Length: 619
Image 1 (cartoon, rainbow, N blue to C red):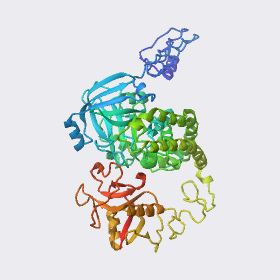
Image 2 (cartoon, rainbow, N blue to C red):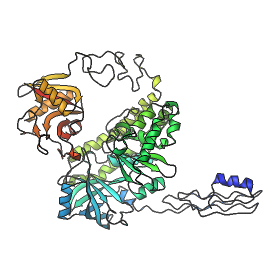
Image 3 (cartoon, rainbow, N blue to C red):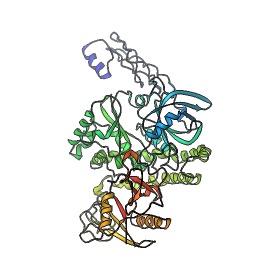
């Protein structure tokens, strides 16, 4: 049998026999047990045999009056076959061969796997993976059809369960259309991993489909890989869920998660977790209470890294792009990041976020203290990792591949500018975060002395007339800090400007659904704005973004005929300004057009029921 050190001590009290402790390596040799007579120490356990050098075994406890045995030898290194693939010192080539039938299938049902032959060439060595699963990947913003720079997901064991690429069963090929620098995932995931947060490895590859260069892609290790789970958690037997947009740990939200691996329990484990969070109503004990069901130390490093990097599309800030895994060794949940391409830009408030766990954490002083400690560690590790230096070396490695990429959506000059912006972010973000760590205790901050804390409560701590509950004025501002401008009775809800071809634009800033916005425009005597030339397009963009950023509805929709966009005022659709790959009807439910700030005011199709500001064209 195998006996723990505490159990061994207990046995010593009842017997003169001594049982040696198990090894302390990553994969302890649990078969080594030794008995000894009084006065003779037990033999030390064997070393570990994992990919990390195992520590020597704990020496056997001495018998009565005896000396403990010598510790076992450390384990040997088992090389990780995937390490060279993710090393990032060369760019592998990935060839995907698809039949005409497979291409047609991906064109019609892009998220359904088809069989394709994959060949990977790395440092002159070729690995063939016949009949692998291939499908398109990407959702809002990143989806591109096959005739453009389509993101791809490779499932090497889809049709052959014994097949993998260097131990990798699934590999994401990200098209990087939302990362003009082409380096964010490489740098960001490195920070997560350095903090001990389970996170993907990332590098790059030149991807060819039927011998045609599709371009430079980010290669991303997917969490739904047995070796990934075993490496980080010691077992792949736990349940792994992926959170989609809006997925969170509330009762009733369980079905919004996708289960990627484990045992199908009908989301009973997520219901159990949400129910447990419902009972944690005392902020003073929250940090201790939540640690029973969630690895909260890992979580605060996960959340701090997300917010430090400006990952506005992640869990902590926006309840999107993450996975959770129930670790079999202690049945606690662990968070993992995903979709970090749109990072290294926004200086997010370190104490903000929409995620349920994040909000509960920042409301608890002990948890805020742990978050602050995680931020302090990040400030140290960003320097130690030399992420800015890695950005420069990555640019040097990738440059020829960037120039050669026939489907890239950004010219090389733009890529270079975004890399420079990433480096600048890494220079300025640490001081920004350090300054905001003053809010670790929000009660200590009130610069304008209006009685409201400047740490997430007072929306302008430099103006004593602005605080929660203040009188609202009609001035395109939010005096009462409720998140809505000018919502006092009598305040106008639109700003009016002359349109270049006659009539008047009404820039209305109270968010509405597309149908609500169109109805309000009709009430005002017009319709949502139609655009027929560049001058009108520029006037709308300049007028809208002078008021506020974000999304603004315009009059384009395909509500009357799927796939055929038309203006709500009945004028011909003789001018468009769609951003690359749009409209794409992602998820089959995007029917209304809007100006998207993330696309430089170009147009995107979106869910008609989302709330957005809007532009009317009035006579």
